[in-house]
Length: 147
Image 1 (cartoon, rainbow, N blue to C red):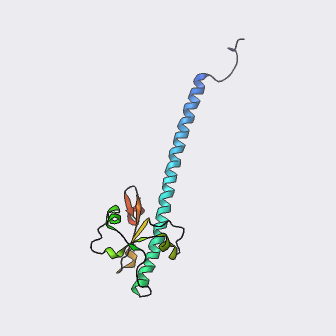
Image 2 (image 1 turned 135 degrees about the vertical axis):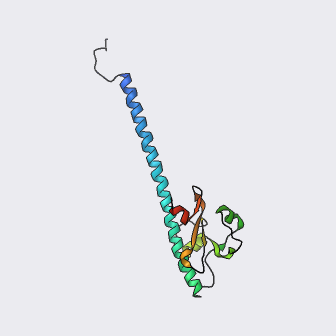
Image 3 (image 1 turned 120 degrees about the vertical axis):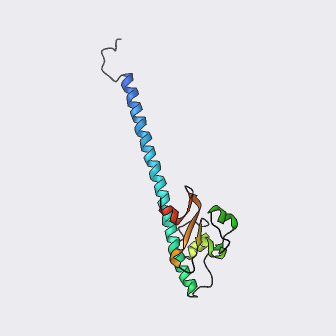
């Protein structure tokens, strides 16, 4: 049985085709990974913006004596070190929001105990939100918005 006269794909062509396919797969995976990371960052920023908006409302209510205290529990030194902030001068204005705090503010879809709010009593627009897990070494909403 002689197959020399048969037309078909050669081994060299098959190897080249496999290499090209592997390159295409590698490029596709890289773009897909970047897209997933970008989507995760956008989710974090959206959650932080929602929390900041609610924090502004809390400060306004607190300043006008509509509520007795700020939402959240005072943070520990460990949490402060994690987000690289000095809380020695105004520790009472740094509060960690739990799941129940988020739920009470109408943000039940956001996972609790991941976010810290720094309330600015003088200027509610300057409230800052920190993400405890961090993203590429950045923790505050201001830093994450620059990415």
